[in-house]
Every structure is written in structure tokens, then in C-alpha cells.
Length: 102
Image 1 (tube, rainbow, N blue to C red):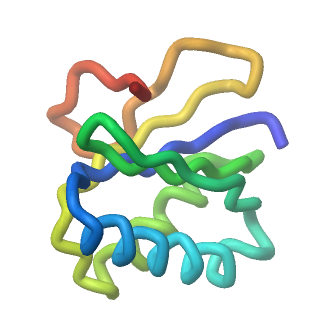
Image 2: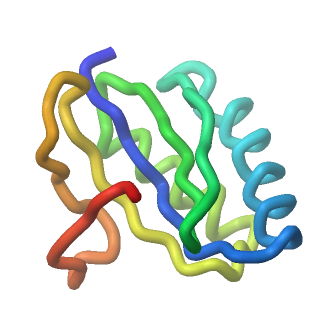
Image 3: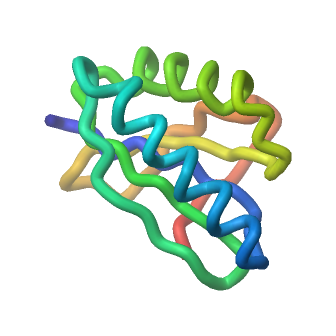
């Protein structure tokens, strides 16, 4: 896998955490043939799901459909970078100007 795709959600409560862990579990099954869900982190008001993939755009499209289908109320941001890189390419929302993982 050449890229790390990050799905980032605002999250501060136990309910947010539980909902987003359930989303992560669903993504593991849905992305199985395309990408590898590589875990998550939670803190400082955000929840990040890390996905390893060779095709970040296709992986994001599939993940975004899952998020939409599940009706996740937490606003999502997403970007990807090369595994050995530091600069993120923003995928969602298109109006986002800066992306970082805290």
C-alpha cells in the first residue's frame, strides 16, 4: 500500500467514540478487497480512522458512501498522503484548506 487515507470526525463523547468504532468495524468489511483499515485514534476533540490503500480516491468514495448510509452525524473531513510523506491532499470537504492529524 502506498497511501494513508484519513477519515477525521469531530468527537468528544463516549457516544461519539462508540458510534465511530462501529463505523470503523463496518469499513473493515466494506473496504476489505480495496484497502486495509489500519486502526484509529481518539483525542483532542477528534476521531481519526486510518486506511492504507493504493487508490485513495476510490477508497474514499466507498468509505464516504458507508458514512452516508449509516447517517453518521459527526462532520467528516478526509485527506490522504503518501506513507512516507507529510503533506496531505484534501478530499473532503472541497472547501477545506488545511488538514492535519492532532
